[in-house]
Length: 454
Image (cartoon, rainbow, N blue to C red; front, side, top):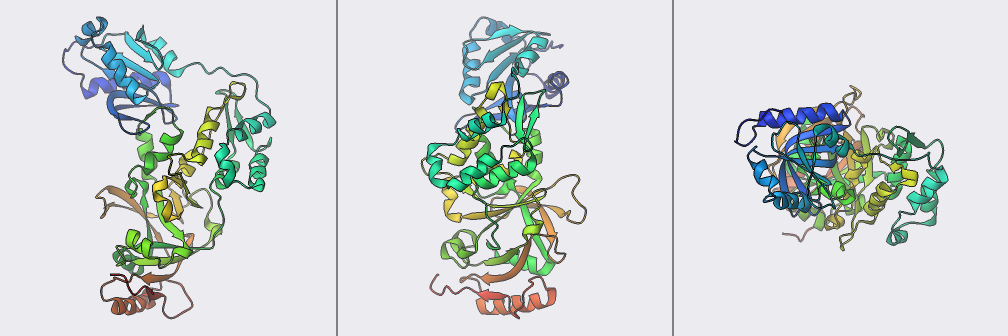
């Protein structure tokens, strides 16, 4: 690597080095530049010139410094400072590079100081050796996995649910990756695991609070909008689960950003919260909006593009027992083998902080795939979210083709809606023209029964 300048490395120089890592590490690894890494508690953040991910987990972070700095680094004046930067965000492997052709300084978590490696040996150190023995027996895997269950979680589990977890471990349900020493479920069995974890049940109807304008647009266009997870009201939601099961450091890779923008959510709640004052105040534009009622067509919840489940919430002591269960499973090593959830990118979106527990959310998730059936492919648009001003993608599904899993059957207009009686009458007449709400009655839109909220 040729670096003659004494100035800070340019974007092109960083990208050249990143490209060298990409070629050496292969497609299982992702190499990004100028990436912000935070500790799992999100208190400390550091920007590194190069960050290397393996399956979205941070493997190494590299600082690229001017060549003259290596003289000071060799003398030990800055080594302690640089080591502390790596330590405080918790990266496993921290690397310093000064543009010297084949000389890298590497710090490994738990060790003191840096050692010097050439590029080839650095790559070996980053990849690490994956030593594992013969395939463990299915019964042993089941015992180890179920042994990861936190004792406190027993209070949430019935004996029947525990036996259902145990029955997931069969010769047909488990896949062994003999090259990398990884154990995983087949897709349908992993889905079943997470549905048990989420106490999933096939509910028949749900409701959703929204603004009056959004409801009006639905009636006018006969379309249901779903927003990407990038502009959820909980700004920490995207990283909540990954941090909860992670090791020490967290950062979004470029691939993770793409994944988030192809993941769309519709936040609903149990129908028992229909016309609920607290929900009006929190999610119905302070009772000026609308509460929509949906029937669910569970046949269209295909667990490929559409997923529906109640949300699991953590405890007010900061512990989330279901996520602790997952975290422990990911850390077991039966006979050196590692357990991996291949569909974590889907099910991680059904866990939230205890701060949102009162929502009792039932969430519809849509994952956009390149090979999605053209019949259900939605229209994609960009918006700037009116609440948090985040630029986001939305997808729009037709409500009159019976391919969307939620059927709009009615709506309640909030008690503080301007010109309430007139708007209810007009919205009903509008729906008689558009036929967006499919119901047997003449009037599908009603006024809230709450009379004393102002």
